[in-house]
Image 1 (spheres, protein in one colour):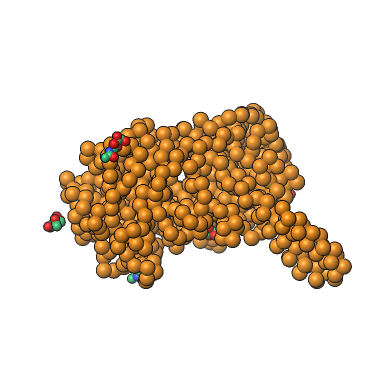
Image 2 (tube, rainbow, N blue to C red):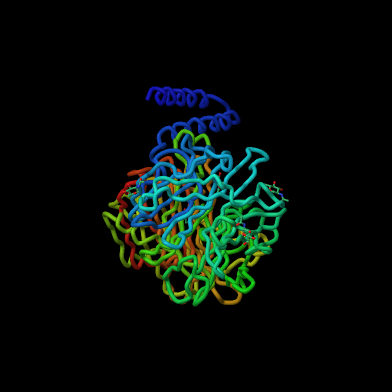
Length: 584
Ligand SMILES: *[C@@H]1O[C@H](CO)[C@@H](O)[C@H](O)[C@H]1NC(C)=O
Ligand SMILES: *[C@@H]1O[C@H](CO)[C@@H](O)[C@H](O)[C@H]1NC(C)=O
Ligand SMILES: *[C@@H]1O[C@H](CO)[C@@H](O)[C@H](O)[C@H]1NC(C)=O
Ligand SMILES: *[C@@H]1O[C@H](CO)[C@@H](O)[C@H](O)[C@H]1NC(C)=O
Ligand SMILES: *[C@H]1O[C@@H](CO)[C@H](O)[C@@H](O)[C@@H]1NC(C)=O
């Protein structure tokens, strides 16, 4: 408290001083003053920005989710964790268990850097459930500190006691490492996937690169211990750079049910995902696992590049899926880092979250995936407020009040009478912006303040009373020359905080939705510094991290808005305060 008073006094003093100075000096001075303010803000909000219902360790750093699985009544989740601080380093495999994917109990770390084959790092990996329901983990170990990031090998770990549903202790046999890197690149060879079976042999894939060629090496084994490199990769692509955290799994073409990773034929397609080190986004394609050639082949029309499909058009990386045998679904976990500065992370004492686990399945079009928060999340829904048939004219902003809107699940259905007033899509954008940045850049130049025809309309999350801070999640619908409409979704951190030191990107993505229905839904999971949004039933998903200085806790407000000429109707809005689950 003392340092706070001193700081405030210093601030007042500075203000008096600066008011007496000339204009030029005032500008300089205000720069200084605002730095001061940011310090005070940071001081005030360390805990306030901590999410309540998103997965986090109690303290310190988290990055990639590892080896998610279900075993004997419990969901297991491991993750890359620094037990000593809130920056990356000292990585161990932290371990938590849950009965419902929402309430989590921490256990001791499962894997720590103790052996020559992982002394300098226990990096990401995956679990496979072997015959007889025996889980096994494959992970990347670092055997040297230099050259950075070192010599990367693949190791395995097995439970000490298969009767223990908590899988408390893991053994790393001395026969490790079981796979050494290919000659090409010893420092770009990591993140083994869950294995599948083909011709009575196990196969899995490992991310790598040679120069700018992204590669997913294929390995084969009869016994899961003795692995041989297959003479061709599962997949590769020019100009991608390092492929981190590959993920390869089947999806049903006949509905929403998930499939075990070992399913390789039938009414299925395969998904291949990589986390691109160079862009820090997760990209996927949908295609066919050609079991004759033993290769993955993306479907015709799939964009297999930086401009391709993303699970999430915002802050989401290093994701991993697993098959949940209980509810017969495939679930995806992804990591969101902080958008605050490293200094702030150190002060906060925590950094990183996992996004809400999402059920993932194939869209009936076969052209993309759909994602939706696991149904268990709804058990946290508490107090509810609703809006029905609320008309929003151009410029209207309507508050959703009466619940804790800093910790809320809000689901809204927008309706409009027709598409006539949709504004013209500016084809110059296609020439000006690189394809992988197109949606993001349109969101950035248009924001919510460029009034349109049909849109912008949507939510204003984490809004301060005076609208100095707000995080808009919104749509704009465009007419295009070929008469089809383009739906743009944006989640804009730019106006989210007065603290201009934060990383405040305006994220964007297109929503491939049938506009002739004149309706579009939006669900946002707002959790203090996270805004995770699902458009049109999970067709387009976008996560922003935001750190308001005013719109904190009970000072935060939530609104629906419309800033387009066409009237938009909130057919129905439900918002629920979310209870805080048991979180590690
Ligand atoms: C293995 O786990 C089971 C179930 O928790 C327990 O009863 C048993 O004592 C454990 N065995 C050993 C050797 O620790
Ligand atoms: C191998 O990987 C390292 C680390 O990413 C990189 O610096 C180097 O250029 C790579 N070499 C080749 C041939 O790709
Ligand atoms: C490992 O597997 C390969 C291919 O199946 C085989 O040729 C080799 O003998 C095996 N090595 C050991 C030590 O079992
Ligand atoms: C709507 O547009 C007007 C005009 O640009 C702007 O002043 C207002 O802030 C916008 N509303 C929102 C919610 O951004
Ligand atoms: C998260 O932080 C932002 C801001 O520092 C960076 O721009 C991103 O690259 C980073 N994302 C990941 C996955 O590390």
